[in-house]
Image (cartoon, rainbow, N blue to C red; front, side, top):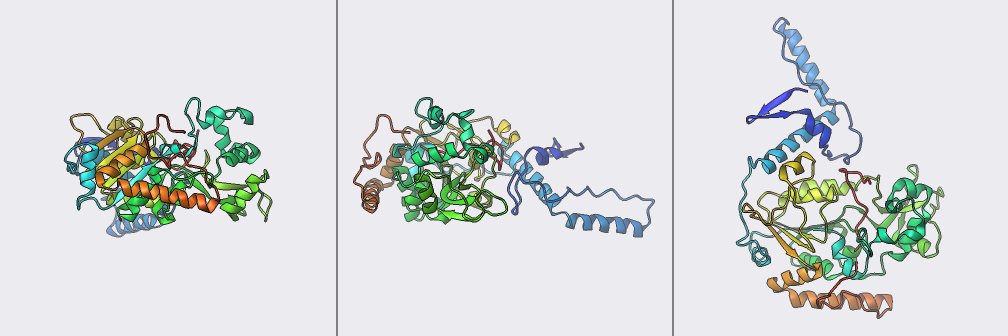
Length: 430
């Protein structure tokens, strides 16, 4: 392992490639490399003839051009080093302060300025709790705390791909209880729709699998469903992979029938990401193009502990303001450790060096209403929620109220659905 010296800092060059793989455009993280890493070009031997030296150079160049995987590995190394030095040592970057104060009011004034035109929303379980969808890990009300009836070896098994292939019954029984179409979007979902209507939403990255972003009116191009979706399903056989619609899957689940492929009779699974599966390719392709354009990140209802989703907060330029709307502060970690573990940049709300991060603590719906009020959008948002909920009720033939139809303060909102957790980049693991 040969050390390289950069700007007075000794770096063990192979470390980025081994510990922090970055996907190339053609493959997701977790896939095997496409080829061997090209060997470094050797120093010319003075005793060789000019012809021999030229031949060796040409051979090395030919080898480089034939090993696309190796080139991707070199690109990954350089990408790691750029991020490492820019985020950890603040080299080659400028931390411009764009907020006049680190408050919700400061964020609202920034959003009304010409500087803020492209907003990325990063959302998790907390934006769906008020719709009545349970989260995963709350001690008494969370999903994992209420699975005894399925006789699982451990709660997470219900979302493990290996267990699912052998025992699909528990998952489909659970899916019947929380299947999309039984819940209405929340104030948070419609706030993002309003951002879209105002021309400010660049993209919504969601960890949730409840499809409520789609129900609220966000189009597929507006979304990156990082942990998959119920919207489509596929046969799990790698030789088949036939696609099935939401309505087809719903009919099977509500008939208490294990969905089987009409072509090969293998089990059909909704396109949500289980433990042990790769994230969608769209997650990586959009990540590479979106974040350098972002003027503001709005992070709502997520613990920022699930990788690689949590690393997205470190992808935007260092000057880009970041607003957290959540019940507690999160995303705070040692920046050096975060980079070394590939977790992205940390958030800083309270130190003397804080310059772009703002935390609004409380119920996510109330946070969106507070921000909308400062923007002059509150009545528009409340009217939008009422109108859309009435439309959904009319379509379903149900007059049942939704917990989020009323925008008054709630003491304890019901629980949200966040997709299965990921702990390694590109692959879900326990």
